[in-house]
Length: 380
Image 1 (cartoon, rainbow, N blue to C red):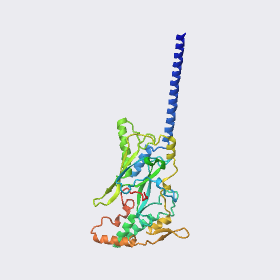
Image 2: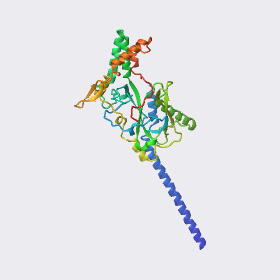
Image 3: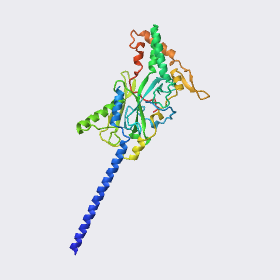
Image 4: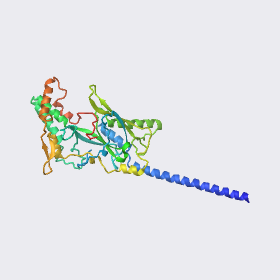
């Protein structure tokens, strides 16, 4: 009797064990199905290889939107500045796609970087979004960018003066026109790993025409890691910007000086971690970050034609009693066009050979005056 009961007990245990195995198997299958579903959903928002390759091609051969009054919030910007007394720091980020529907890595726009009165910007420099871009929702063909218009006007006048033999005056206007040229600027949306609670941030920097800028380094990193994966795994589908299996980007920022000891813009080295990981282990958090409605043009204001006209005339914008933009003459003369003209003439009189002349008016219109990656004039 006991023997039979023992057999029965063993039989029941075996059945129970088999049931547990089957349950765990079904549970794991369901879990895998859910994970694959979540991964597929994230792939709908992903920074894709095709999108990155198209953008790489476009940078080797422009986009602006919306004119509104943006409110400054430090949390909206990636802080790559070095605080006083700090010579270097590391910033770890994860790059997001441009938007929920745009799967590229960056937005490309045109900007004007100008020397301005301290009443406009304490640093003495200010970046303005060029409003000539046809991708701008408020783009109006009848209201061209005043800064671009002033640039072409000065180039034209400089050429006429040069033809009249007035070389010094022509060079002065030519130099002023060059200052008004547009630069190619990139904006990338990121998550700052040390400040994830802030949500998506925006990182803006200029194109480096020497091919050694921030975007160049990112693209080189993307291509090198992809080539390594192809060599080691035999697959050409590796993407460091992937939301599910990508890499965090590590920025090493260092203070640097010239031979005379004058401080230069900090150097930024771009590298990536070696361990793959998702943007977040929480799919809802990923969705929240990727679908965040805040756009770059919500944090980088686009000035009105009236405002930019005053800047183009080298005046200080202010509003009258009716709320209209009016230009005020600068209180100091050192930034006036007359002073610039006199200083330029003095320099020209000391030079025997001029390397750049108004003859190059046509060719320089689409080139940058400063090839370095400039930082935002943000009060960090």
